[in-house]
Image (cartoon, rainbow, N blue to C red):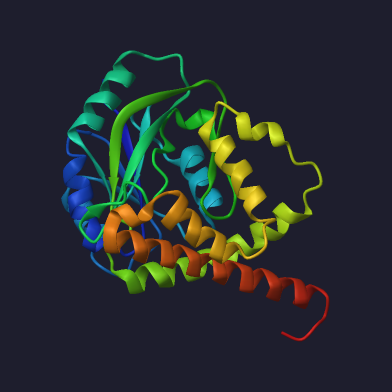
Length: 276
């Protein structure tokens, strides 16, 4: 049994060829494109992928539209971003899971992040488990950015990895993209602080996505979050063992958090009619 593949794109000509090459084993690759202005669609079509275009609004709405409206050829769908690669080991695990006709509704997959030619083994959260193989009718997404997959059914785990290259477009592109993400994260930060009922029991959940979300909600309540985030990545997570890439990554993450906090405060002042 084969597996369908979904790739979300916007001006990904830099990444898409290598991504598609790693997925050549699938006979049903769908590229959901947000009206790219470069050669993304031409590259996808030349590789035999189906291209469907939809204007991007936010991550969860975009992904929910895809799992509800895209006519996939197979019951199981593997979702990758264009800056990710499917390893040979992951291909084998994915096909084996689909062939086994598992009772699970989805599978978590570990991800490795690379920066400056080095795996961020320490600076990045590892293992980072992401739900990427699923039955589309059994999954929905929440949050405007960095969406959380909500699965109707049990979730299994595959031990192979997705290789992720988040800086493939360059540091400037990463900063510009996270500047946009910080707009949405500022809204989510306000929501998190307004929530009265917070379940501490989520910290002990067997679901890593539930634990991660609980940690994020706690984190949104901390003072001096940018500094906390730097020391967490660089010292607690021992990002210093990743050399210069580890220090640079921890610094960029702290800067991202600072943008979120500045925008959160700005939104609150605007809501109160105060000058910004």
